[in-house]
Image 1 (tube, helix red, strand yellow):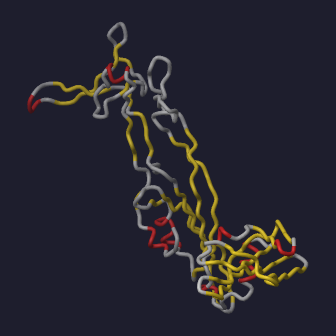
Image 2: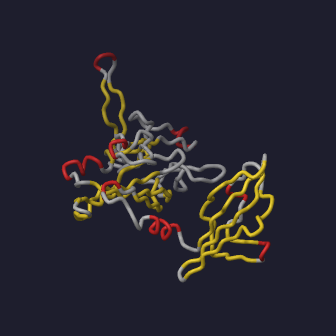
Image 3: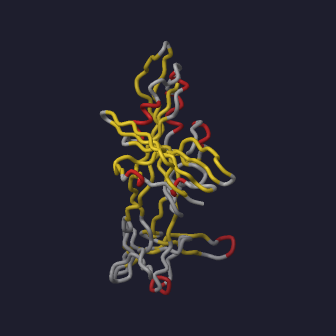
Length: 288
């Protein structure tokens, strides 16, 4: 359903130095989602508007008919942070009972994919077809979530065990666990403890991927029970062994990659798990 009309004399204004607030009562039919209300203050019946006063939420709802309701929308020029601070003027006396503070930001990770991101993916190779050793770095954005919570003390012994761990999806890391100085409020001592988590999206994980290439390959010498795998090296024109640093593509099992696979750019890549897997429920934070 949607808004039917603005209620006559349904506008209340509070304009003081530093802020402007408006309560607007609309007549609505049935369920009306927040998106149906103006995103900033507009009151057409009085030709009034304030583009800096944003919708901050819906207040009281009163039923005035079988399918007709009065809904009050709140608008304010104050940012969310200012309004939150106003709401926290009288916080709980016990600092350990105060809510967790949350912040969000972004960072970038260098990833080394085996192929580019074009419509017809191509392996990262030089003109001869040899793969580029070390790969090509691609910047991948990730989300940073930060939580600050008042705690009775900072657990120094447990600190290093909590950071640089990963959740079971291998997409989230706890990269920071920090306690500031000790405060005292209303006779209660506490520490502001900061937790920081990095999170990547899609199919990307924190595992590292590297080209399977080396300076030699393995060949099987002998047969039956006496068979063993030994290293084989490139040889120069005189038959001397050549140590080619990481330039020999391998087949993922220690053998040399076939010429056909090289021509088809079917190189092998190795995945390495960098961080341990942990359970973040130990932190006791909501909304991770």
